[in-house]
Image 1 (cartoon, rainbow, N blue to C red):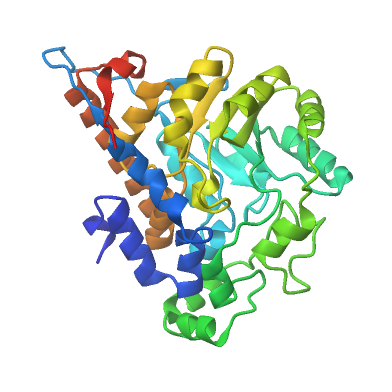
Image 2: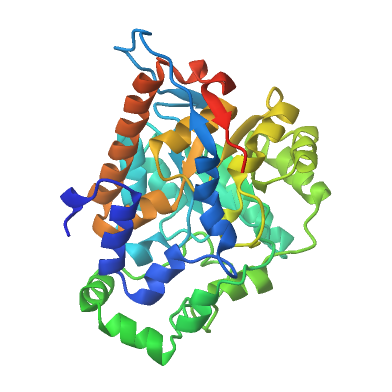
Length: 383
């Protein structure tokens, strides 16, 4: 199977599975507990039907949006994700370059493998820094200061990960940073020697946002242990309000799922919220963001930019979210599989295909701009 044979989310997933050792593929592909929420995230879109209009004159289609003060050519952005250079040696460099080509926003994680400064210097497209709240308050302040000095456009605090989710696939393989694999995990690496050759022949794996503060290499610190041992479960709304005031700029919370929390985000001065359950990787059995979108938009959509991620696989998914009131939609696995499959050309192809789907679907819906999408274009089925 070649990159040119990839036409959708499932195709990129299959190619990534062929190229990645099992433990790394399962780190991307897996979720918490029984992975019920992971499946629900995409299935939730199937309960909603599109109602198109015709004969609307749709020769020109404008897919641009403005979200958190950033003008994007597309209503989708690349959500920040961790450890990208494990999946392909280009990592965040590939994602940033592809996002810049398509005129959209990309994010860099606290667990990113390329520095904020390098990416900011190379690309002027909007950049998000996805931040975890650590027990060490001095570390939090230092990381925020660094992001501000690097010229990051938007600070994104993840609020649904104060402890690690129960990701049982990773436990079975022993996936950790550095690698402390089970015998079964090592066997799966041996079956994909091309990945290993690629890994050792490129620059050493690093976590530049954390390397001056956290020892991820001297011991067998798993990703789950990082969340459990380093992050602060006592974080509360006062802590976040303090961060918002210190940042003094575009600040969004990722992981909001209730109306009550959305209202609190408005009260403390956030400029955006992202409805997210971390791609089903944290609390299994939780609601899908799409299922929560309408009531949260109704509650705060005129006061704060509401976005969503988790489960986006098609252009029609994007249109349904926009019609319900989302300002933009984030994708994660949708570009990570493509990154693993082929590096920058893979991410570029994934974004190109999704862009083409959105444009085609807008024409078929009879709309020429994102603003024309409304709830009149939707009908929910009774389940």
